Length: 136
Image 1 (cartoon, rainbow, N blue to C red):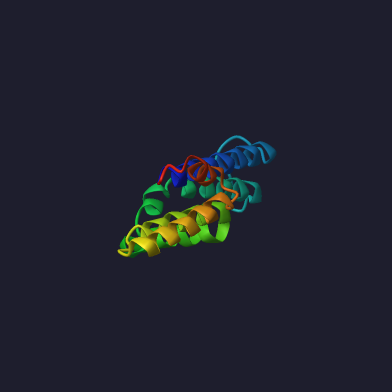
Image 2 (image 1 turned 90 degrees about the vertical axis):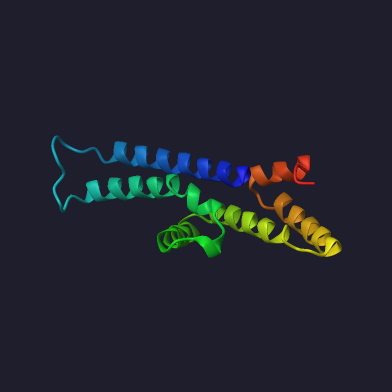
C-alpha cells in the first residue's frame, strides 16, 4: 500500500505542477472570470484533475468489491487518465488477491510471478520492493 501511495503522491505532484503551469500560461484578469472564458475553463480543468488524484487515496486503498459508486467512478477516471497510477492500483490488487491463496506452492509461484512483474513495471516504488524483497 505504501508503494501505491507513493505513486499517487508523485502523480499528484505532476498534476499539480501542470495546473500551476497552466494557470501561469493562461493569466486571468481581475475579478471573477466570465462564464464563457476558455482560459478559465482550461485552468479549472487542470486543477480538477489534480484534486481528483489528491482525493483518491481512500478509493485506491479499498478492495474493488467494497468501493462506493463514487469511488468506482474515481477509479475509472484514473484508469482513463493516468496509466501509471492505474497500473500501480492493479498491482496492489493482484498482490492482495495473491495473499488470499490457500495452497502454499501455488501462492509461492504466483508471488514469484508478481515480483517479476513488479521488477519490470517501470514504477520505481514497486521496483524497490523487488530489490529489497520487503514482502518476503
